[in-house]
Every structure is written in C-alpha cells, then in structure tokens.
Image (cartoon, rainbow, N blue to C red; front, side, top):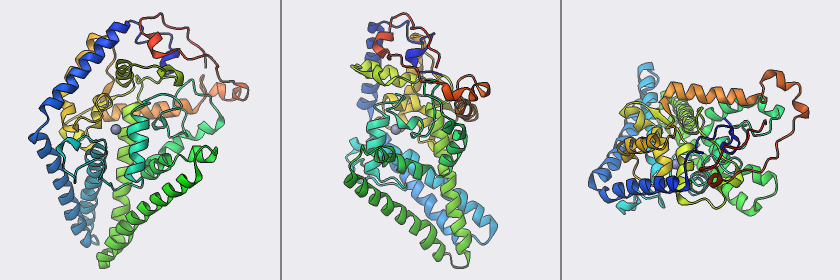
Length: 395
Ligand SMILES: [Zn+2]
C-alpha cells in the first residue's frame, strides 16, 4: 500500500471527471431512496435493539450476583460482553451519527445520547463524525489510521520507534476506549503546544468524570452488590470491558486497514467535489462478510463502505443497499474490498507488522538512519482521474 497519488498503477486513472460525477449522482439516488422510505419498521428496529441490549445487561448483571459459581460467571460475563458491544456499536456509534434523529425521539437522538465509553459523546462526535468521516484515510489528517502512533503507509517516514508498533497496536486493542479518549483529547497537539490549555483541561476533566463513573459502576457498586461474589463480579466486568475493547478495535482495523484499501495525500483533497469525496470513501473502506449476528455485533460497520458513503443513514439499511453499491464498483472497474473477519483481520495485522519495518524489510533496518522522507508534491485526486498514472516514487 502507498498513497494512491504515488501508485504506479493508479486504480482510478481510467475514470474521467464525468464518470466520477455520474458515480456521485448514482450514490445520491441510493441515499434519497433510503431517506424516502425510512419509517416505522426502522424505528421499531432500533427500539428493539435498545430494549434487547438493556435486558441482556440487566439479566447478565443479575446472573453475576452469583458469579462465585463458575457457570454463572461464564454466562454473566458472556452476556455482559455482548451487551457492552451492542451498546457501543449498533447503538452508541450509530445514534451519535444522527442515524435516528429523523425519528424526533428525544431519548434516541445524537444531541442527547451518552455512551458507556471513556470518551464523552461530545468529544467523540467531533473527532469521529467531523474529522474521521470527513478526512477518511487522508494521511496526516485522519488519525483513525493509527491514532498518531502507527506507521500506516509506505510513504510515511520510518523511524526505529515503529519497530514496536505491533506491540502498541496490541496494547491499544486491550485498552481501546482509553486510546480513543486520548485521541479525542488530541494529546499530540497538546504536546506540540497547538491546543488551548484551558480547553484541554476542561476536556480532560470530562474524560476523568466518565472514567470515574464507569469505574464506580463496574468495579465498585456492582461487585459490592454481589456480596460473596464481589471478586468474581469485578473480574467479570473487567473481562467484558476487555472483550469489547478487543472486538471494537478489530472491527475498526478491518474497516480501514486491510490490503486493498487506499490512502490519500494531505494536499490531494484540496477543492474536492462531493463526487470525489464519495470516490475517496469508496476506496478508503473495506467490508466484512458474514451473517446477521456478525453484522449486528459490528454495529453494521461490517458494511464500512456503505457507512462511509452514508454515515447518517440508519445502520439496518446498509445491508439492503450494499448490492447496489457493489454493482456501482463493478461497473466502474473499482475494487470493492471485502472478506471474512479472520481474513481481513489477518490482512490488517500483517500490514501493521510489515510497516513496522522500513520499506525493504529487515535488511533496510540497518541503513534506515540515513533514510530521508520523499518530498514529492502530492497530486490532487481530481487530477488523477482520467490522467496517466504518475511515476512511482520509492519511499
Ligand atoms: Zn462512523
């Protein structure tokens, strides 16, 4: 993988400006169709998921009162893990995108929703909805590509710091919600003195308040309620939080990291049209194939391509529009990246390991000290369309 602007075989060079605008118009129509047909069955869907999640959590926490008995511990922990994943993925992420705002239900609304995550909803909505979804896979702009601590592209200069990135990535997976909170706090900007200190202090106190609230519930109140089962309940809550962290991290890696997903140079989005933005979303996301349960547990982010094209459409409709989107890819000679969870996860981790080494692999590590970053001006995505592919540049 390398930024699309530097690829010898540019995958969109065959498209003319008119082709791209036509793709944009088709996608607008798909979107309008869903908006026109949104209704009671969609509302019933999200209400049913929220009710089911709350019941699963209640029953699981009830079972954990007796978690001194191993079968109760296993059942309660499994239930609580499922409930926490549903709460973050199919409910929290999607409600905060505004996917259900059209229902005008003040209790299921992006402006009112708070979730079980270290990152307060107001901060997360800014970094996810506004930054990640706008600047998807743009190197240096979309920190979802690695939360600022990962080398995610051959064109990114290698330093010995990245040798440990498989370890950083594994640690980030275990403590993912705290990683997200740190990312939302823009700690990198704070360290460089580029963020207002008063704003940072205020946001930091909000994060601490959330972490304290979560910690009190999962590690103090519920264990104490369990009496003799206090310690097993505490362990169950910690396990459920770990399971959710590992799961959400895996789903997100599968959405943007597998081989075949494109990245883009920072200056390439200058003057980007709506259709070009759509095209970048098509090329910058990957789907996970699987059954209904998998789609539900990923918050329908298994349809990451469709989610990135239409982040505010109800998640239960992505499955229905996916064949139309895929057909659009096929007709325009574009690659719709999809695969099973194990396949995509393996592909993403393989890339993390590969990019932890300099381009050229282990033999290049020794000579890396003298390696310099390339300094070729990026080509706007618009100029790549319908143009001869640029010369490949060795990074
Ligand atoms: Zn999203």
